[in-house]
Length: 259
Length: 274
Image 1 (cartoon, helix red, strand yellow):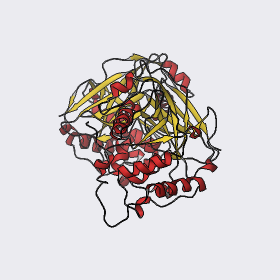
Image 2 (cartoon, chains in turn red, brown):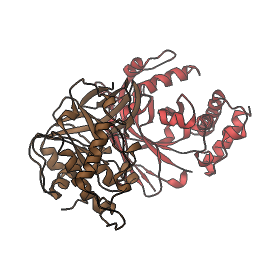
Image 3 (cartoon, chains in turn orange, blue):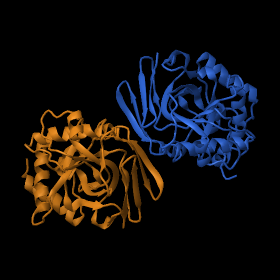
Image 4 (cartoon, one colour):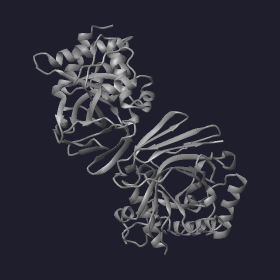
């Protein structure tokens, strides 16, 4: 394949200049999922170059059956979340900083202890989780018109742009993460509803998948990491002036404003 | 009275001089015969002019053949924005279950008795007081809600391929066929708008949702029913059970399928098809 750092630079430039590029899957022959994660790592290195912005956690993508079917895959993907991507509840996000943003509501899970794959099961992942937090994730694609295959989105930080987090982490003891309900509104109007099971059947299963997948890169999850477990509904586009609010049962609400 | 009638919403009360109005009892007989013989029919509106108001008269004639009883089970349809947009209306519709249409706990649905069954997960409300009048709101409904139940609405359109207009489906008793109800639990402390729903079939996740999928709040859907009944000079008696509307899109089922609905904080309900 083409040099990972070259592809990473193209994506980095696209992000910086807000000028999306054609899908890597069309311009590079035989780009594998492993290659795509190598591009993602090079992309992250560029973003962190000269910036003190640690990886604070991960986001999962393609965690729902409909999304996997849309992209013709049977697995999710992940990308790192950098401190610089994380915003507080009520944050005003400038759409001019983004290319073609969409928004989705997710359950964020915070680890109480380290979790190292392989072989992590859902119940083991669930017992490593200490708290849950309502999250809005702004996704954006550095690929033209969101014309992505799985390798395109993996290379492109799993299409991640910004994370807005509720002000509190809520203890998960006694909460069945599968059935907690979610309502997302734009300007007060219900856009979509869902429940935790939309993320791989169980947000804790998403954490187990991540731990096992990271193990193939010899990386472990560590206590304090926050994991965005995947959209609970179909993402929808946002524009300047939109006020988006997600309510997740027991976790509270989180709001993002687009300016 | 602030509600918008389905007729006004759809413009379906515009007269059409080109087609006959059709006799209410004859139209009801078409639907009852289709159900009895399990033979779907073309939409009534293919050959007769049918307003929504008149469609409810046809529904009344159909429901008159059912044993609804003093504490009826009602259902709402077209309660999601997506479905309303699909049908180009901005109000739901309602229908009634006869008591022999309500399945006993654990009783499978006999698909051979139906034409083209589909199922959808719902939250049902059990009322503790009579609800009536054009000013009833979701708050009034909640104050008169004794309990909530997980429910599966088994639809069976008497129209081939579920092809119908709003007046057709109103006349066809909102496609009502069977319903399965879980155990009632007190609504106290449950935010029905946020109550999560997980819907699976044969152990495979079909869809998830929350109560707000139904007109922003299941109690708002029941309030619409009460206001719409008031428009027709009726009320909702205490002890009624109202299936408040589909939380997800309906799926077709066949003998051997087992569907499961879990509503957070309310309970789970499994329904087998034979």
